[in-house]
Image 1 (tube, rainbow, N blue to C red):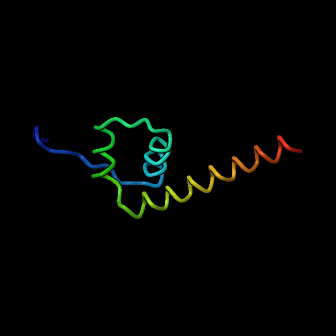
Image 2 (image 1 turned 60 degrees about the vertical axis):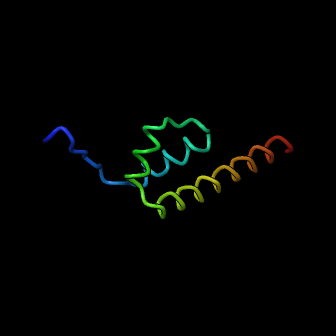
Image 3 (image 1 turned 90 degrees about the horizontal axis):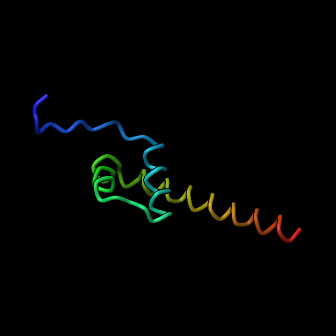
Length: 69
């Protein structure tokens, strides 16, 4: 390998979910953000974001249900 060669790993659902979850928390380093931009597609990020939002809302609903029960 030469010095300027960048090895891209195959994007996966796990990479997309991890990127979205870190974004929900608000902790992202610039280097990780740039790596995610080059590795992930917009569709993967949107799907992971929707799934993350649904899980978040369902978790809140369960907590409220058990607290008020």
